[in-house]
Length: 492
Image (cartoon, rainbow, N blue to C red):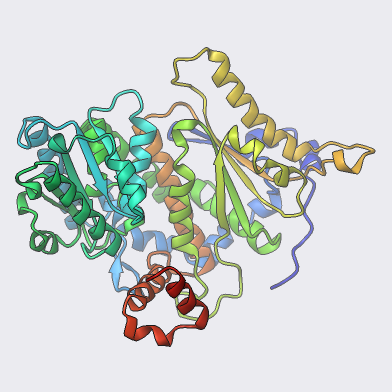
């Protein structure tokens, strides 16, 4: 790998261009994107068209929106865009019909087809859990029609906690698995069925709903086909919240809110489809990510949501970005000669200020930071709370850039540390739909710039297959001495 280049001085860039703050800020979908505190120069901005052309970004976007086979290693399209109205006519029509099917089942729940319903236990893992959990937590704090609990971890403690305040007599169980073979999900589903049985539910399978791209397997599991909500196999798990995987959010928040979520995402889809590379916000952000990874050697990117309602956003984005772009070979199967996606990490402000910001301000690593805030609060406290929250978010970006001189080296802050800010006007279904779609397109654009396939995730499968092999005592001799010793020590 080449040695990292030296960073230009952000303070000097601002001094040289009095219009920098406005020229590097954009508006889209109820959001303001301020990229002015990143080390972006006018010379670099002038290369965006050629970067896109050299990487074949325009052609890749055309193929993505047309629903062509773009996931080449698995021989399928990536059709999450069809869930919000873009793609082949057949795929869009099918996605629309499946949304109607989901809304019809929600109408049946509300009409009493399942008897009295007060809660939903949603069982999934990865994208089958992270998306619904984020939506319900972010948007359902004030008006939630049903209690929703999401369980992903196979650790029994997670299931214990999820069902602790649910009434089995009035709970429906949504089992979300694309293949309906996911080990962790099916184990938790079996335990949930046992919980219903042990608590006097006469027909536990009558309380189950399946969210899957393999409807026949759900029927074979024992779920009536009228309660199976399918989605396309070409919709990846981490892109699936727009499909029937979003059922618990649509149920808890209402079908109108779910429709608005899709509309927000569709707005960003239209922007990406129509904008030139030098005005395409996800592409600009992705190109900036490559700038820091390739030229400046940044191995991580930090995201801090300065809003408690977005506390689950970083885990959601971690899967989206690192499962998509954590690859070491190109689309052609050749070893990469540039870094893959940065490691994504972060937390929630202001808590994180007292945990990790010491490293951000005075550590030796280059860590581009992204702040996400919401201009309009929605709590019942004095307005001073939200004012202080926003002031802290903006102050951190200013301090990272400006730094502070001191004769005492322990109290010296070097400054010139990069940050970007995304400010949402307010948090509602349409805006969060636009925000997540922005990150999806940014992830795709970075994959094109790297030259990798963002839609497979073979690295996820290796550890799971080895776990199954370890469970066979006769096969354990093939494992290393450390692993065998740990199995023995744990009494397995």
